[in-house]
Amino acid sequence: MFRGFSVLHDDENTLVVNKYCGFAVIPGRGISDDIVIVKLIEKQLGIHCFVVHRIDLETSGIVLFAKNPRAHRYFSMLFEHREVEKSYLALVQGTINENLTIDSPIRQFGSGRMGVDPTGKQSLTEINVVKQLQNATLIDVYLKTGRRHQIRVHCYSIGHPIIGDPLYGRERPVGGAERLMLHAHQLRVREIDSGKEKTFTSAPDDQWCEIVEKFRMGL
Image (tube, rainbow, N blue to C red; front, side, top):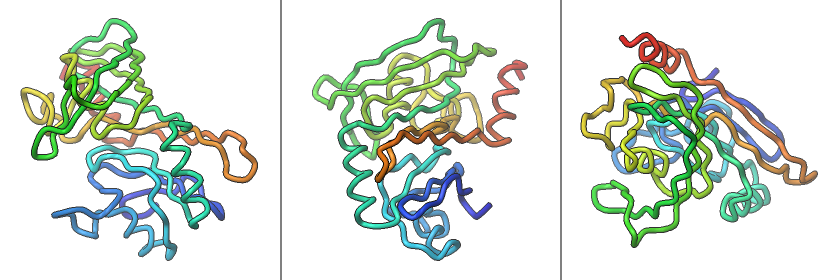
């Protein structure tokens, strides 16, 4: 186990990690290198990795890095052409009674906020109900497109913001939780040489499970 992440898979072409909540994948304005995963990988593992995709700083879960230019080109094309299956676990406010497909365009507004708008880019999210809790619902989310903050925006747009979200929701953080309850728990991708499908999974951490338990108990 390392600062900011744990290693799920490591071979000559790829490094797959479980990123912890509160760490950024890449550098950004106002973000210290001490919480940037690509920097921490280089410092702690002694290897240089190429960024293929990102998840939000507040989101935990699976991130795939390429370890050479050939792998970077290959996996970047898979993500660009939506030939990768990504699913997330999320705890949202309120009760969702049935599985949903949200097909609502998203565009950027201001100060980094995204929102549903007819002039935005096509955005498609599938939601499957896992379990109903006390004023909250645990859902499995499948991204069919990859817009910034897509899951957070789509859940907010249907009146079910993600618990712990500090940006989208009437109360912030939503539900008073100390972290964003969004976890990238599964990634399915084809290997670079064999073309065989490989599935990576990552379970939520103890803090996540404790928050879910609070909502189950109605605390």
